[in-house]
Image 1 (cartoon, rainbow, N blue to C red):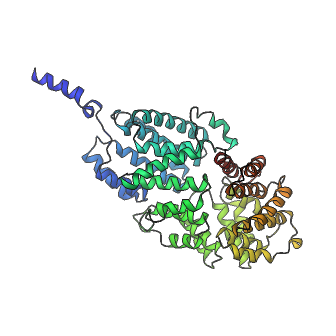
Image 2: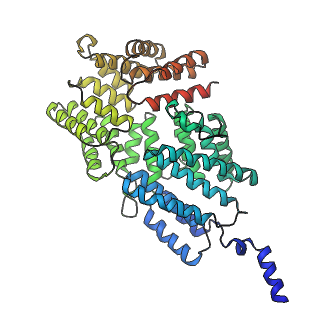
Image 3: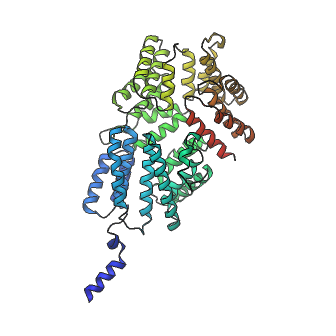
Length: 492
């Protein structure tokens, strides 16, 4: 009788007995997670092995393993590895589903695994699968939010989804139909992440740094707050010992005119056998050096090409090596690199498509126009202005270069905060380039919209954002339309 009573008490009184497994970020699991997101995968895997050996019922290991797989695929862009690792996703979800449903991590881990894979599948152009995973992740997160409204990791993921959903380009409208019930705005997603970070500032929160990264990228790409994107990260991440943090901070520095800071960060990035190889950081350093017109810029771009096994950014890198040769006065090397730009890599990203289009042109660009573009991209606006001043517009023979000259002059004046003059050149670019296949007019409309938005002239901003959306350039269309929709979302 006593043994029977004991069995009943165990059956109904212990969820770990009833469901067999649990979800717990123990001290060892926390360390494994931290190693994973710092790209120290070998150490993370060693810790996971220890957990599985001594704490086999802790299903949180599958969550951390998924971080490692997805980060690996983002870095390597290895298609064969992608096909192999996809099978692991299904296995993990099946094992996680056997865990304790009374834990707030039960639905969250399933959702987060799906959301991570959605981002990876977008990278590998599995758009239908990506939207399907987003839809399932959202439903799981909604259900978990009702059951555990104070569970902050949930809000981290929901904040990202709510911010992104309204900015999906029209070319993916078919995918939006799969996201029934998922609505949101940039402001909503931003507020949800701020709630999480507000709590994390005064309380221990495992995913604080991850949320900071997502929030900063939201500020940069969707909220039109580039300075704030940099400010929220500065002093709160650890780029000297976390390679992923270094990558993120270097990326934001490059996008906010802090080129010297990007060079410093990337030159001092953590290295060694404990870190997973990340060739793209050599590409970033090479681009940053090129934007400063440094004579050693080509070394890092060539190093990237020698160690990277993916397909994206290959054409773009050969184009940048060609530009490097051109501004060094070596037109023969420019032509040779442009031949490699045509024959090597894939034209899937906006940068690679632009590079390929230039490589197919029959003329050699004006060196001062290339110099002005590079200096502008590095945030060296006054130096860029001096270079573009050396160009005689009437002496430009190619119609594309004449259009680019107007566009670049507008961008440089924008950077120098001479907004009325910038708008003048943006309008000229739009008038003369609206029907052209190049992205100059479309981006000129976007940038004019941003100026008016910052001046709180909402109707003028809307006018230019709609102009941007009305154009169909062959380069960067999805990215530009995504940003224009984000602008319209901000000023509703």
